[in-house]
Length: 172
Length: 118
Image (cartoon, rainbow over all chains, first blue to last red; front, top):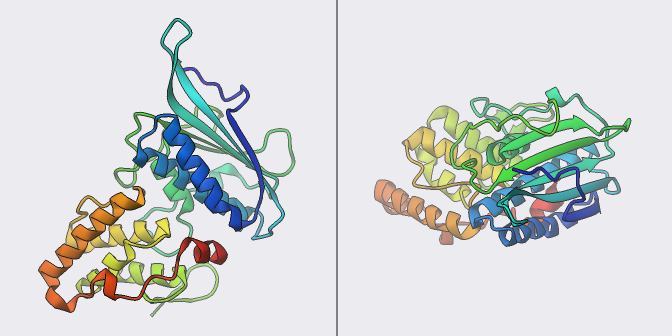
């Protein structure tokens, strides 16, 4: 698989940390994923993961402040089939913010055995995406970066408690 | 009965407008293996909040041993089919005492109110 994450993304979006834009982001991610060849189920999972990630930034990163900046980038991942023909095999999504930094290892999906309300966003993200990586925004004193990968042939999200593979984009 | 996590105490209530209160009711039902809560848990499968759906289907599996093909991450039309199967299951096991989705109060977490709550 050819990783194009360092290349220019196909889709780039900047928004403020206001929940009124969540619906539009969900729809955009869902439709874009379908057009890239993802199944309805996988497209729904991608939209769900992005939604939960952005909600987490708004709630916990910016403490519900409405004017924080959030950046979303989506880059298709392709496998070269020769002759310059590339098949989309997955998608990488990067979400960055300027909110306070936390240690990436502190961002954990809660064990569902520890059932109590709240804090399930990270669990959901890790359950539906193939790779999930939190890191401090490189080169900045503020902000976090979340990198997520969903593969076309993913079997994530159809059973509970399936941990994602380690992220190949960083050392987390 | 309330659930104490970080922050204020949450009052568990399936019919609350607050997602946290509904989630607390789900958690409480699961922890008690509360068979009588199954119809309410099935109602929660229709929630717009994925966390509520996740907790509800896991609670239903814990109490009944069934999932009936329900995936909380699936597109809405697929979830609706699985939720219908759960409704049938409830009627088979609980008879007419169980409320149908259409006759129960609508959950108050439409996408608009959910996002407002966030």
